[in-house]
Length: 196
Image 1 (cartoon, rainbow, N blue to C red):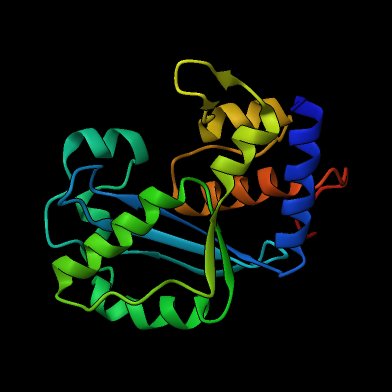
Image 2: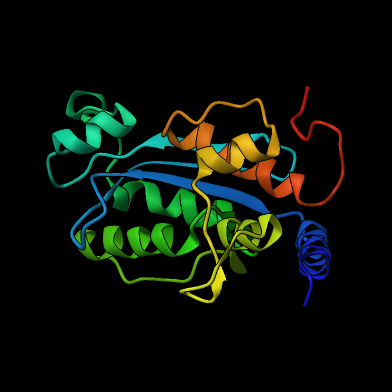
């Protein structure tokens, strides 16, 4: 199968997902390990308007290596809501909606881990979550012969490849808007998807 055929298939799938008017979500965390928790979450709507953007006070100290990535310090989250207090608002914002996430497996795992650490029972996110990173890997078409799959591209690499002039600051709002712009880029439409 040619890459042009694969790419056209991705464009059709993306436009089908876009017709559902999805929201987009990103998180920042205390790390990548099995005990890591969410310390920031952002959800933006179809039009790029911020629906929710909040720091989250974790149960654990944010390690120095994580702070070096996102620059979210322990002092910054000191007065933020804890995950059990914020979850009802997150859940209400996502209810019944398709949710686009760049690296959905990671963010869903961290949502579940934050739930577990807070003693909450996990409930699925929105109507359906889909992975912008995996769609973009097919769209971009860098084939990995040893794995027999398309190589995943980092959010920053995808930003450069798409020529998108938005920051990749490793903060939830900036990364959510960037993931949304990358998703929109795959529709083949050329105008700026951001409002204003």
